[in-house]
Length: 640
Image (tube, rainbow, N blue to C red):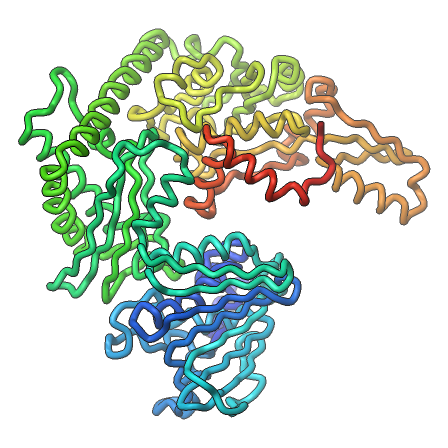
């Protein structure tokens, strides 16, 4: 490292170089979410045309082995005349210049999802190839780009019928480790867009799978909510939906929302701003919750429905609520280019002022529905009180001495620094015994669990606390549960799920992940949950020993050995479980921080994860059956 630091050490990145140098700043990363963010950027531009009344149809096509995307709309078409400042065509400026676009003012777009003028140029910068076609004034124009730079001039390629824009691109493999687009993820996004912009016709075409689907919903988000409630499987408390679609004159904003209470034990809200999903919420969700709680409390107080001895909390009102919020604002302030959170402070008051009086009025004029809703709220309050009592009983039993009150089967570590400590949640007493012998006693704690733990997808807090295995996990973690949760009291830096590498182990790991996702999701958000990767196979090649975590790894090792003419000496051993591993082998392959492999549990798409978890772990068996039937052809090497 040079000791001097002068002006010549300052790097100035020109044009789209910053995007290629630091793509994460613009698309959040280069994994699957970042790759598909390229699609969302171009798609948002097409939707903006439809949102403002200039387009009625959008076409999305996957081609070239799933690595190329084409998005077309019948909007006005990208302008092609010369820009007065740059003397380049407007199309070239839009695709090659950061912060260039027609959405900074409101002359051309009243509301829009694309706002920063970087979407098209970012996609271009991160594409191996991009082709933009614009149809305007009866002429079709085309320009090609590579790595964000023009490879051709803007050319007339013929006459055109109608107007519109078509963008085709392939992600750059030098930027993205995987460049194949996920058709299921794209289809889900397209269907949601068709709900949010009722009447808009969106066609999806997959040339590889020979699939073509059209999405068009004339009932908008009311139809979307019915779809969500049906997919989640929990029965509704009332049949009629509450819906609001109102314009806010002072800010020129529009609020469109719909809600329904169900028998689910959680709150489920999907929010959108100008058609863009805001998975991390923001001020619009805050305003929605404030207005909702005030309206329900006012109804309870007016009709004197509050039960004696029970305090109704905000969470009781929101339990079981399913809602879709779609707002349109002229100047949304998103948190970053990925736009997953809204920060406009005035939006909180807008949602509150629109929802509260409308919901109060609806409850007062639909007494039968209102009674069912309030009954659901009171039931949630009583269940919470029962859960709190059960939890206090557990805490009371363990109040005297922290170490003595830990679960009896927990083999704790000696270090008192939480930042050094790791908790391995191990499948079975046998595996737990091996892990206890293999571990580093200073920083690694072992908690063995007996058998398959409780499926907590549709389980109340009180039932979880009554379950011995999960109660032990909660006590060992030390950070509390439910209302008493406090991550600062977490006793370990890493919580590692250690299960066998076979299908039974995968099932147990899935059950534990369901518990953490539904009931201790903050631990996942803070990056504290990990999956250990123990080997399924031991492969001895002469004096060398290799470890394979699955069949694919085993086959790759054997193939490599075969290429070196060593396959004849290969001896392959399949482990029946962690319990039969010698402690030294378990340490070398799974516990040793220098040689082990851990997978951090992350949630890249909260909505998609919620849906998959509900389908695969919920009470509705038909959802799992449909999943199995849809994926049956992809199944290989079933462990049965």
